[in-house]
Amino acid sequence: MKEIPHFSANDIFAFGIGKTISALKNFPTTNNPPIPREHIPLDKGEDFLLMPAVSPTGLGIKLVTVMDKNPNLGLPLVHGFYLYLDRVTGIPKATFDGSALTTLRTPAASAVATEILSLENVETLGVFGTGVQARSHIEAMLFVRPGIKKILVCGRSLESAKKFIASLNVEGREIIAGSPEETASCNLICACTSSKTPVIPTESVKPGAHLNLIGSFSEAQKEADTKLIENAKIYVDHRTAAKEEAGELINAELESTWSFDDIQGDFLELVVGETKRNDPETITLFKSVGLAVWDLMVAEMIYNETN
View 1 (cartoon, rainbow, N blue to C red):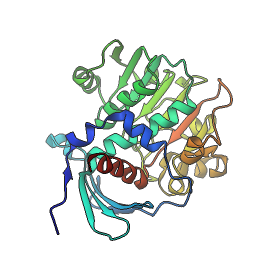
View 2: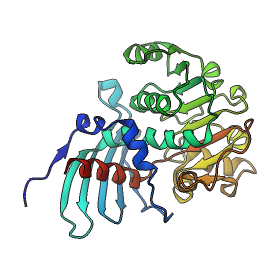
View 3: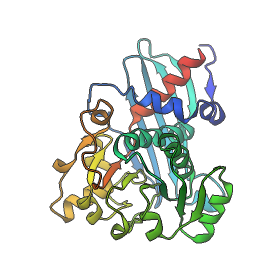
View 4: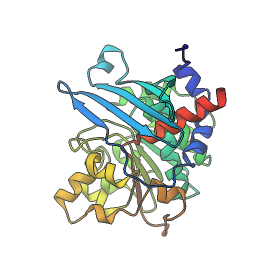
């Protein structure tokens, strides 16, 4: 077998957030249940995930590790590797830096939802988190809502927020460290943490706000409390995946009268126009646990544009 190409993080990021958003807008119109991912808990704070996907033209699988101790060692929290194969022959066609695919496709999906659900005149963006997803979500939100004038960042500490802000290259906008309450009062909010306790103060979220929650992928994690879930109109990437992995929603159903039947729509329904925001005063919330088919769509886009 001939040597297959490998796409590094730099190769992947060179395609940019705009092309990635466009690729995800071509989401498959058959809303079949995603292939279950295999989540293997290791030691405390350590996870190993296998995420397979199938499309009419390709097969793919992403291997991901999440190691809580890594940031203290100066290493990324998440590492990943992606294998892309031919749909007809099963022959491997390319490999990709899996973490870079995640870094690009997750904010692109949030951006698609934001473009549909958030108010068009958004001027303030609040970001919870100071990792790679926080950084990529800022880029994605500015792409679909270029009218944003002010960005607030809330990290685990004021020092971490200021260090993160100093590393950003955002021109023409004011960007400052904010308290949880200040950050949650923005028109547009992105939560990009692995927190096991809510980081967003519900009482600070204003009518008309839109939120993207992307951090949790298990019942033990939640970035928002049950009150916020009850107050908002909830949209998800996929209902089946959300029932299994969206910690905020799983806990809300256990703790309140809210149920998964209250979900307003999923990613496919948003993309094809079957659901949208209906009231400028409504709080909308897009909860994503991440779909493996997004990785496959982006991998196919990159491969096809270079071959």
